[in-house]
Length: 241
Ligand SMILES: *Cc1c(COP(=O)(O)O)cnc(C)c1O
Image 1 (cartoon, rainbow, N blue to C red):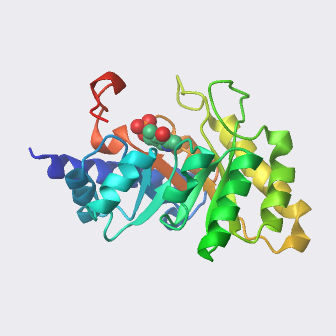
Image 2 (image 1 turned 135 degrees about the vertical axis):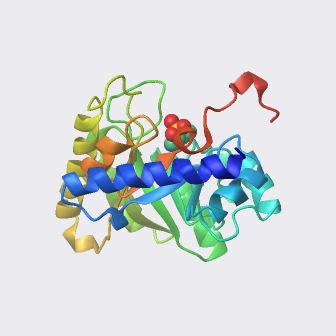
């Protein structure tokens, strides 16, 4: 069985799971984007995923993003940035991707806005929220989310589309449901507080291979899947880049 074959089967399985979780929650499955987290994948694998029906790809690293863009690998799909972004690298990302999920500090938010102004465009962004207060992860603490959203609304180079989270790795089904529910509530609260700002936050980027069904149940509009689509990733130590 070739890789394209198993990719198509994996996509079909995930879609069936999304349909089931959405139906159980009374949601329309069409509101959930299946974003392929393509880190460590080759340009050919990315092309195969798009040919198999993937409509959005998410990259973690500027280096891989640039290499795949040079290859025209994302042709036919949306491109998102989902990884940790350093302020000195925003110039390689702003204006090249449809959505930056991982805006994790005010410094980064301002740097993105400055670069967008320079290019005379508006960059769509999400605020990454560190719900569990994990030191190993980036993101705004939940209690700083509203002030970050207010800042985003003031900066004309960015358009705030919603929130994103990466909760701790789930051990059992259901483990991360409370985090997903919390992110959804945070988005509701921010929208209510900012009614005057004409923000249209309609994206909740949450759910990965181990917990996407819970994320869909809790209202996710974008699940980011790597291993569920492509199989296990090679360990970092074996990576070429
Ligand atoms: C790698 C990655 C994913 C996908 O992880 P899997 O567990 O392989 O599905 C999703 N989001 C982000 C930010 C990632 O870095």
